[in-house]
Length: 396
Ligand SMILES: [Zn+2]
Image (cartoon, rainbow, N blue to C red):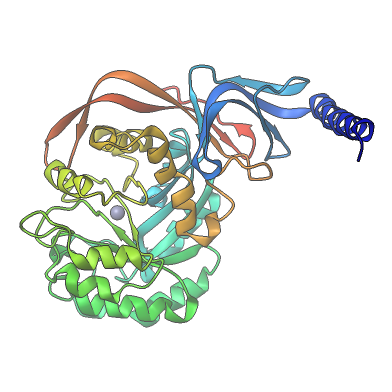
């Protein structure tokens, strides 16, 4: 092409691009989230952007969106991130749970083993009624979480009953949970985990194990996990932590990650996280794949507080804000097939958005042993947008 043709081709392309932009500006959005720092690790995006939402989906992510919108949300000075996905909660234990954590920015959650085969139906009913996407892991113990232990009595680890329960709620139960602490299953941990795998083997669903203080070592337990299974409470202190007595990561733990096993925080309130273990693990570069809270309706009064608080706990160990957001969005979305189109602000994705405040100051972060660390930054929930609709703010 000669110079004249080149100029005219370039002009044409520019006009086309300009025309496209004009058309986009004339478009009407249901909601525009304006002026926030958009952090979306799925897009490797960390920049000031406007987000246009139409028909419940992300319609545009642009430096500036002009034109008419039914509503705008001023996010200046705030972080705008994909709706948070909490893969270990007990949100479905109480009818009011889902709406409460929605205000914290949690637009998708997993109830991890609150109920077993015998008491699953009410938990599934709460998931079905939830405003956001909620799914359930059935507990291998047929009575769910029991004060005397989910499966200390091995007959409670009833694979047939668990399979039937999953089949009864095939769209709502997305995996199975096995709590393997000695106080929960006694010395039965290996056998309980074997039975747990039997339940989901023909269904191709993941297992989540609750590790820490088990009778058996992770050297014995991790080989029973398959790719895509999840280890929650990864910072649990001994006996049977992911580190040995000298604080070194077990080779089996590194091998498990190489096999595609997901390591999750599972903050909780008892026995799950201690700062000296966090320090050892983080220093060796074995960072979590996902954050999760182990949340329930009482969490505001404990060291959990809310999901953004839990996401702030590793800043002092070198984790950046975008890395923490990845753990609560795109990484969590990969853990469960049902979340495959979540955890992103990509155009076309469901418009689930969390607006967070990143405050500077001096903040206390609790482990499960009444030890406090100080941090200089903390994420706070601010606004939640679910399927393109702004969620009313909490009055409390
Ligand atoms: Zn839990």
